[in-house]
Image (cartoon, rainbow, N blue to C red; front, side):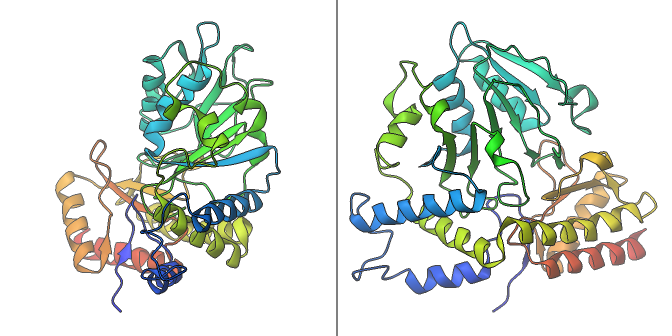
Length: 360
């Protein structure tokens, strides 16, 4: 079976092993029925959700103080749900701005109430990350929100902000499960599935009970986190098949040795590409300053847009897909998520070296 090297930023590569598993069960999951046909009120679907929630907490090393919620709408819906649930006239939402998506989250919060920026690297054109070791956060703030990995720009936090008693909320859409993190320092984390968790359509929210109790604002039922917690994420019809795929991916992560072993491979994959960039004599120019580089989204520029377009065109002819940078920033980007094999990164590194020899 011919498989291209998929470096798309999301929807992104899925483990081939998982795709085969899903294929085997596509027609008949249990009782002669596909999972896509089953009622979300059935015991089979309830059991699927319970098992997926348990595996998620196990992999993250979190205890029963946390609940796992499934919903749709992606991270963009969370940008609105977070302030709707927690901000009030007396309690602001504090934001660390480090890239396009964190700025979108902040702007969404502004439509709800009093959102404040406590640190930003926008003046540096997102090429670095703001210092977060000594933030001045209002102790009465409802939460402190930041994005752990910036998909578009290609930067990643290695040190996380500390705000004392203020709840820490992390958008981990593009690096959840990719590396070890102190997940228990977060009152809440969320991620769209289409990077490291599964196909597009599902969003996972992991929230601690004490923050869940803080959802007291009179907001629409469908936008209240308590609704999902009280109904085991089955208040309305959820994206059942996407959550089934998420379960298969989580089981795959466990078979790889968990996050610890996944991270080792991700470091190798990223280094293969960064080594080519750094040794190219400026032919490939990394967009992000070295201390802040992402393992998930490797970004770079070339001398002009025409050469970048030619690079993308030739890469597609050589079996690569998804290497064009985001439309808002241009350039090149290789998203080396968990399911991208190390061989794909080796192949891309070799292609980059060869392209420079031919076109440099």
